[in-house]
Length: 314
Image (cartoon, rainbow, N blue to C red; front, side, top):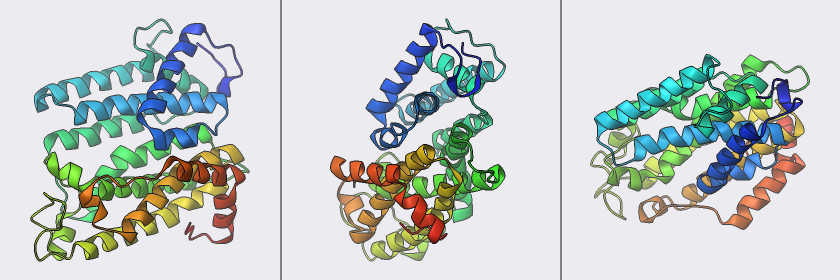
């Protein structure tokens, strides 16, 4: 495997093939994510693809059709693979390309790989069918499945110009929460069809939505628009804090984060403009709009705006 930080050493063909596999998974399965990481230099792009491919594997187990006991078994097997990566026991000729790529990324960058254990913990919550009474309860889940990925990504990006890494990690974590809450709003009907409820029970009751979402119209007598507006305000506040990360990164890493977060921020505003759209189908952005957000990120427009206005309202 390569042995120097940030990819200055020779990388074997087997490791390159493992990274290529992860990049194919990322490009095929994560269009929003891929728009951002294509702005990174090669070593960082490869490492981010390895992180995504591992995350995709964990998510696919949680979202699959297996019985809960089998899901739990496979999640523990994935955790065991992660333990081998952390112990330096994965050879470059290992048959699992995700393990090979992740091990190499861990050698190149200071990745807090415990965050991937947190991801597995979060998906285990899904398998157990956990629900959340309050926002604080839901935030624990969001930190596992998204905040941890933000902190891992910061391990790849690093901080620029002597910025406080610990503070940057807090912002990365918060930005992850903003993205996850946006996902939850976007997928509210799809999740309900799969027997999952993520929005806090306290909020659902407050707006008369405790009966859940089982059609393309809100529950009878509910204030569904009020519920969505309430959660949108919460997500906007999370984005405002999370965007403070942007000036702390180098230009291309900042562009990557700006592109990924910008896509979700615009998605959130689309939901805010038509709350009931999330009950009629999946709300998304056209490719040309995603490309525009990526160009804004590469130009540093969002980072400069955040530097002027630390509230980060994009």
